[in-house]
Length: 376
Image (cartoon, rainbow, N blue to C red; front, side, top):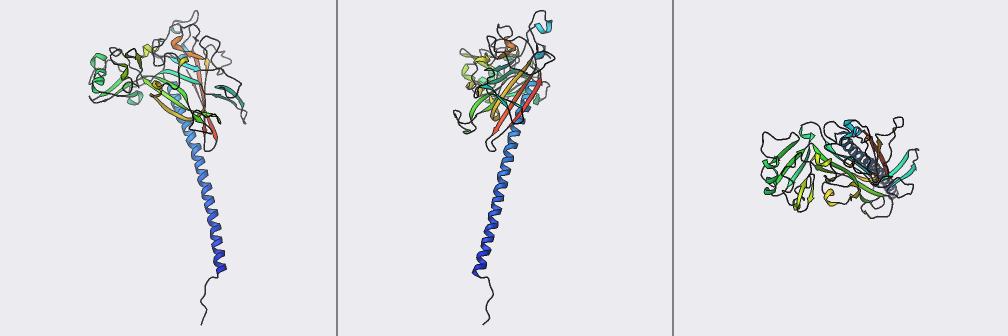
């Protein structure tokens, strides 16, 4: 009988070993490619978050903050000042807070980390804030701040009423700076070109424990939030009309506060006056304030530095560099145009503002930084 051809056991074992070896190489290459892709995506997401925050900051800072075309760089209250400069803004405000002075102690809320590996100065700040009114230009829908009013038909019917200057429907609205929409249901919409805007940080975790705000390991991380409170151009017959229980959720997105048992609504003219805004005193603001947090939106996660610096109108023209706010006055580290007349607060204008934002990525253990510079 002829022998039947085939592979020997040794040949089969060698073939299997070679196949397994090739599979191991391919699987390792696949794992490496997935890890590389994941890292690149993480860096891309981090840069995208930075770009989003940068665009929002630049848009808000570049808009008008007062009535007409008045600018923060127009303002100063000094002896023999011109009429334009000597008069306080009649609508709107602009405020910046540095809650602590620059320190050399590592771990302080605002401290100098020295130069990085590229000899670029590195500063870490986690207690800075920007608070301002923003007035958008134009009359297209995208040029308005919007908020939804959730509540019962009786409350919304009282708000959207001819007696409050927000009558729906109406062919002759008293102000061109608002749009309105209400169909008699439990949801209404209010839009205005004016809004209070606040940028601030809330502790979310650390570089070692991202989801534990109380973590003592690694570097603390924060979320950059933007709170927005749409302002009514006219508060006639609004203040005192609604119980303060209606603040949440009906009027949480509007510029108003409880005033005793009722709500007080604020206009841009009110905001130019001390205390007539959602946060009367920026020095006493708590980032965990639930009233503000419910109207806030997360702009950028995993922030490890949010540094705000300014150029004063009194700065030497030959040395225009961004610097910190003064801590020598009674109200340390605060610039607030609504308090120009209060002793101890700065009462000069600002030429420009610089905001530096640094974020952290847990996947790649890397940071990225962006700086927004805006003339005022």
